[in-house]
Amino acid sequence: MQTQNGNNLKPVMAASSHAGCLLCGSKNPLSMHLHFAADDQQIVHASFQAHDMLQGYQGIVHGGVICALLDAAMTHCLFSQAIEAVTGEMNVKFVLPVPCRALLGLRAWVEKACNPLYVLKAELSGDGRLLASAEAKFMRTVS
Image 1 (cartoon, rainbow, N blue to C red):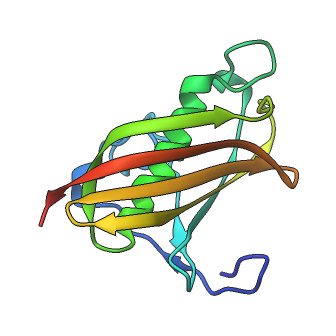
Image 2: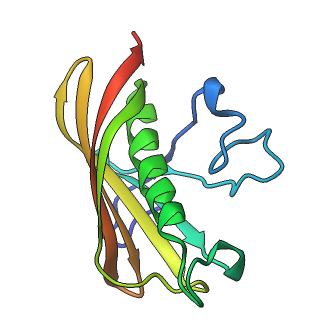
Image 3: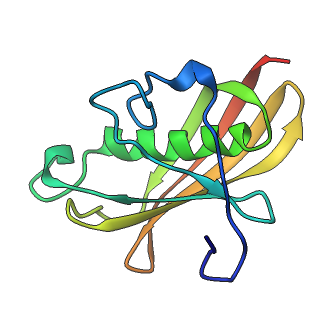
């Protein structure tokens, strides 16, 4: 698998503690079953087909779902580096409405690492446009 820039992607395995996760959990029947992969620059990528069951306002993905998608991308960015951490703070910018039936792209990367604290950024895009972004602080839980 490759990104649009030709970077090779390696699948990211979620921590076993995430088997029940609503977004990526293999043992959660309601899971969105997101799959993430990391490129050569340790940027994590995923795609997701939005649907009407995720709407808040008519035809627009609920803001809480958008936050959860961005958070999951950043969490998996840390998983790709064998780091388990929890979100301590997250700031989200909603740039454009996210259509319910859009094919969405997620990417996340570590902006700053000072173990046990990490600052990450993530972006949600669709149809070549930035739809939402986030910056978050994570605290490592397992050494």
